[in-house]
Structures are given as structure tokens and as C-alpha cells.
Amino acid sequence: MSLRVEKLDLQKADISGSKWQEVRAEELDIDNVSLAKTKINNVNMSEMTLNDVNMSGIKISDANFSHGIIDHVHLFGTEFHNVVLPMEGDGNYHPDGQYKPVSFQNCNLSNGQLRNCDLSNVEITDCDITGLKINGILISDLIKDK
Image (cartoon, rainbow, N blue to C red; front, side):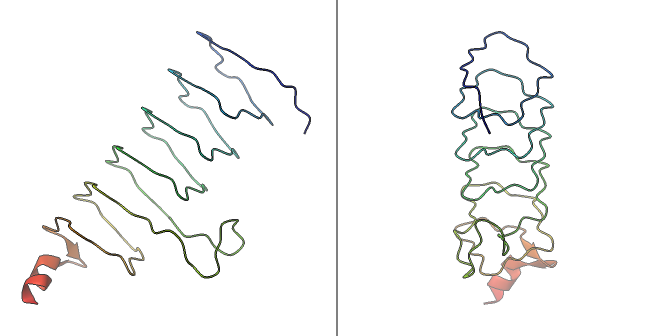
């Protein structure tokens, strides 16, 4: 791909409806910009930083979010579907199945729901489990009986 190199300094500009195809746009500095209703397909966003961003109603699909960090985010009403580990043929697949674990720290997941999930080898440490049920059974009752 042969690219024309051009530095743009857009300020107070309306570029709504513009199309970018086969564009290298690395290390951009985007501040106080509306990208509402923008469609982003087949884009490398590795090591991208998003701060103070309104992403309500966003849909992320077929994404590699490995080693991503979500910090101080409002997730009420958010749904996660079909979140999986890499499969054979994926670029970051490890045949030994050794991946950095997914972790939740200092999160309020009260009233959350987990359905049809693989929770094998999950550790819950220093958490408030008041009202926590697994398959309708209160965990506090199980612990009390031990």
C-alpha cells in the first residue's frame, strides 16, 4: 500500500460523513471530539488509551481485548456474551492453555448475573458475599455448615 504522508491539524472543523480507507493514523491526539455513530471496522487499536469517554450504547464484537484494562467504568446494564479464550488458529492461541487470568478488583458487581459460564478454578477473596447464590443455594449457608 503506497501512502501519501500528510500531517493534518484540524481545529473547530466538521468532518462528519468523511471516510477513511487504508489509512495509517497512528499516535493521533484527539481531544474534545464527537465520534458519535462512527463505525470502526478492521482497525488496529493496540495500546490505544481512552480517557473520559462516553461509550454508552457501544457494541464491541469480534475483538481481541487481551491484556486490556478497564478502570473506573460505569457498567450498569452492560452485557457480556460469548467471551472466550483464544482458539486454535487465533493469533494469540497457546496450546498449553496458559493465559494471564481475567481479574476483577475493587468492583461492585452486586445484583450481577452469571449464566452458563465456566467458573472452573475461580478464586473469590475478601469479597462481600451477602446474598450470593449458586444454583439457588446461598453460599453463606454452605459456609456456615462447615
